[in-house]
Image 1 (cartoon, rainbow, N blue to C red):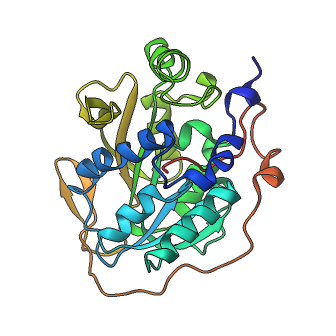
Image 2 (image 1 turned 90 degrees about the vertical axis):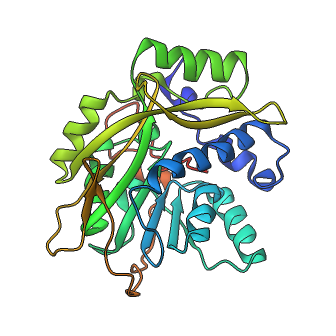
Length: 287
């Protein structure tokens, strides 16, 4: 099967109108992953009044959770219909989340725009991982933090994320993932360091239980062989960033700062030729 068929970007636009309806099981799965991620990241970041980029926001599950924590949230994703669903849901609730269509390889923001970047369920889908990491480092303020998760490139991860989740349990649509794009922790650490970021510890992430609808719930795990999450920081030019348990923690002033600049976002189609063959442009799927 071709790599392009496996890394199917159309899935997120196809269900955009149902994103917040709880009618689609795999969307409920994405939504259920957000609390487990934030139980970990909340211990490392004080979100209130921070400028936060949700890179790969899709329909807005993570963006709204960050907004609930008092962050000043910008969400970006190449799936235009999913972005429209996110905007509509935020507007209906009176949320001031800023959503834009764009890709991680060419972020339409000025240098040093964000205190934090959240990039979950994204890195294993992008066309040019090195470029995405460089763009994240560029838009982070000195002392800022990247919160990420991704899928390990191991046979067990392929079985769990593709064979089991897509083909057997149907927790995700077929074609969601291309196992060739999964990333080993050592590779990601090297990429983060090359981009000028300082990696922190990683931890495992995955199913921890079942809710009343029979859907999985998620949380931190000791095993990093399938999904792993962690943080990386941009070296601070000024004091005000503390370290907790070996990972950098964002504890800077809560004074309101100017938001990121706006420019014309690049489309996924325009970016397809920027990276190695077989990697499709995508900054996607935190939900």
